[in-house]
Image (tube, rainbow, N blue to C red):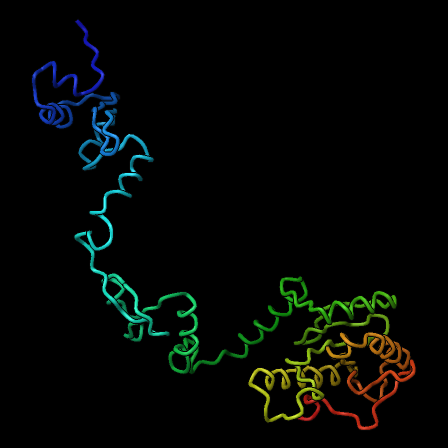
Length: 315
């Protein structure tokens, strides 16, 4: 007679054998192919009985009929949380950046970096702040190294390509204003045209002229930054870069660049319009190529009596 059993528990009762003995027999001594063997167990949380696969019976100490019961049990079972956990080993340490006290586990307490120094941080902000102070000089991975001329050339070409295809998008508000001015004047131009090693803001195709849009801070407007000794390292580097670009364009393309500065673009766009008209009509011949040396007086474009020289024309 064939008897159908719902679970291994039924077999245990019918044979009057202990459940563990039956499980041991079925799992180790009797091989049953393609038969899902089930065991009836009690949920550790709700105490209801349910069936699980035999392979899970010995794998876990506690069994749960649902995820809801599992998380409810985890929430209420404080034995496995915090200081009640037998493996708890956190200790109070100080943040390397702000010196704030915090709890950190043992494996973090013993961690060191490539220089043998141990650091601990209370937040990502502290981590990034400390990086700026720590990874300098000999701790900087590029310290004492210099790229070959071939490598520098590859980097230059790659950067120019990224500007040309639009991957590097540096269209600032002053640049958008100048682009709109050129569009309203029906002047054909190319943004970020590459000439040699350099990228040009606006190349006027039909008249072979160049307009550069200059931010007052980074390119250093001498009307706002009168003392060259007070400039920071970033500003000084930009001055040298602008000088090299200007020298290169004049030497190899024989073009005097018109520099429209942020202050005039934002505060007096009409001055920039008249200056562009003059620049184009004279085919690039101006008394000054910096917009800060011009004023609109009674609707007429006039140069200042005491014109100022840009820093990249001085250094």
